[in-house]
Image 1 (cartoon, helix red, strand yellow):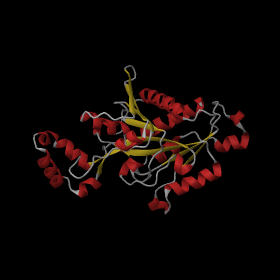
Image 2: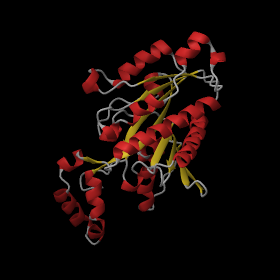
Image 3: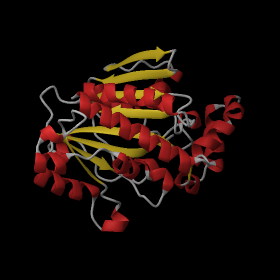
Image 4: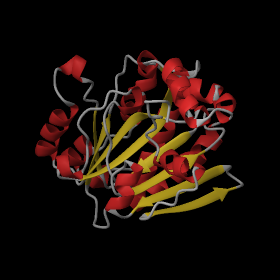
Length: 302
């Protein structure tokens, strides 16, 4: 807690870690971890199985897969290919058990704001097939892709005057996809996870979460379709950085003194500021290719 302000994070893994730091066990939340030493990829699966677990975590019930790769921001094509394969495997596992015929990929975010442009860039790099299959049939697909893939970048309310949910609902009513995959930028608690972490979840996603501008959620309840959310933390709020910088000083203060100190140091305006790495332009471009390639691989395996 930052005085009267909560530490923001969109990652279920970080929400779970907060309780572990206080030695608090959450009932209804199961965690599985796996580390691939050869690929240097750490995967954590957080399953929120009960309403109590969801309330405590502040996240909807469902499965949250977090892929952490320290070198994800490094321009190594072979390494990113391995991450794409890892991502594809988890996407396939979260897809419905029944045969998936069509998928709509939604690129959330603002193209004009680089840390928030991940979603639109992913859609730009996707192998879109719906129009080809509808026109010529599946037989023309050389790479054995049988899934009709369509994509949309709905923009943000300031550009369209419409809620993202309204736009997506309209598209779904017309195209009737079996699954919606929404890609967006997220916010992290730790600067070490910026641009080095991918979260995949079957609970959907909240547009604009990466820049603190939450809109109506895209989930199975609001869209009447299975929704998978994919996100990468590209920003961290400034208050968190200040808190981390003062952490050792805070350890020696009593609880009341700590609260008063934080209330004075972390002003409301600080909570409206978000920080991103200086190389975010290249990183977002690179990660968009990694995620789109993971989606392309997944659609071939369905």
